Structure formats: C-alpha cells, structure tokens
Image (cartoon, rainbow, N blue to C red):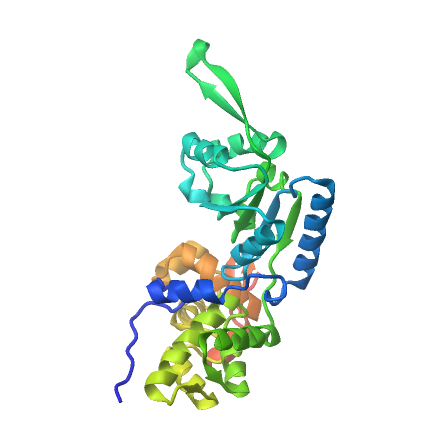
Length: 343
C-alpha cells in the first residue's frame, strides 16, 4: 500500500481544495445547540437578539475578536439565521474606495446584517464614511471638488454591522467605540474539541475511537478549524494506511507523519522557538529580526505562531522583544542555562 505524500507547506496555511471547502461548510454548526463552546458569548447574543426583536429594532453593531478559526464567522451566521436576516459578507481589504463601501451599504435591505471580516484592514478614508452609516444609517457622499463641492446625504436601510478581527489592537478607537457590544472569542479546551470531533465524524461518516479523539484534540491548538482539518487528514490516512477506522495508532502515526507534535507544534513553530534560543540566546528579539533569522513572514509570526506559543507559555512578549521561556527549552530538549538577556 502506497504511503501518502506531503508538501512543505504548513497544514494551517494550505489552501483547501474544492472538496475541503464543501466539507468545511458541511461541518459548520447552523444552530445555537450545534455550536459548541463560547457559552458566555452565546448567552449574551441571545439576550441582545431577543431584546431587539421585542423593541422591533435592529440589534446593535457587534465586534468579535480573537485568533483565526475560533468561530467568528460561524457564530455570525447563526446570529443572522436566528434573527431571520440576510447576511452579507465583505472583507476589510476589499473596501478600497468610497464607491466600494457605498455599493455594499446601498444594497442592504432593512434589517440585513453586514459581516465585515478583518475589519482592522479597511481603508482609513472609507472607515470615516462608515461612522455615520453605523450611527445614523446615512452615507455622506462628497460630490465635486474645491469650492463647487457639496455633500449629499444618502439614507440607508437599517442594518447591523458585525465586525471580526484577529488584530483588535490595530482597530482604530473611533471605529471600535461605535460597536455596541465587543466579544473576545476564547480558545477551546480539549473536552469541547472532542465534542466537535465527534460531531464532525458523524457528519463525515467516520468511525473513531475515544482515545483517537483525545490525541487529535491535544494537537489542535485549541482551535475548532484546526481540529476539523486534522480530522480530515487523519481520515485520509486511515483510509489509505488502515481499514477506514481512526484508531489511536492511526491518529498518532498520521499526525507524526504531518510533523505535528503532542502539543500541536509544527515545523514553523519549532523553527521560531529554536531561532530565539539558538540565534538570540533566548531573547529578547524584535519581530523583524526574528522573521529574517527564521525565514518566516512577519505577519505569519504575529498571526499564526506567536499567539499559540504565548498561549502555551513558551514565549513572552516584552517591550524589547520576544523571550523564550524555560518550558520552551524543555519541550525542545534544549538545556536551559538561564543566561538569556532578561529585562
């Protein structure tokens, strides 16, 4: 039986093929009961929605922030469905001109929801036009230039803006303050991830042992999106190298083959830590220097590696740069000397 092959791209960064895109949509929960985790946020959203419906108003604008893959888009879809509203999806980088924003806002019907992903990356000029749209449901368009310029107020239908961002610190204060409720998406614990694995396995028609669920959950970086991706890759391994059943042995061998260790660290994660330890004596080191020395993209370090490594307590971010903690040395089997350049 032939052995599956992998490429050099990280599993977290791979672009899904058409089959995976369809599966991702299939695996997404569609009701509050199906959505596992984030209980505090779900309770708050239910209250906001119920109160708005009783007043016959549109809900306040909402902002979700947290790491990639924690369910910001999914929970927004469920909110829209429970509200009985149409959901329109846009991304911050796609809104480059005033005309782009005007086209999106004027096509919203009364009570619609606009989901703006990566809202911290919206063009700053467009962002200022968004303020009156959020507060007064109107768009102030400037016609002409110079002394002949005039402002035209364009009335908009009532809508709810749901913003999502992985970098809330980059969100401007004026925009952040216009959201009526702000929620931080929490990382998931292993028990919640095992429930997600079980639900996904049932949808995909996969037989999986309880011990195998534990192994996949432990290596899923506390993230639902990652746990579903790992489950699909382990499923492939089970069908090629096994008998279609995901056993503990199959799960371990598949994840080891993908070079994902028992804490979910991949090659890139380990490279970042090793660079801090071996090339910078444990730190501190700035992100630009770290990116150059590790041959990794700066944004990848900030958005993918660093949040998880900090969550594990492997690195510390200080005003002078990143410092590797003792636990990182121990995980990589490197002797900790305690001689790093501490603040």
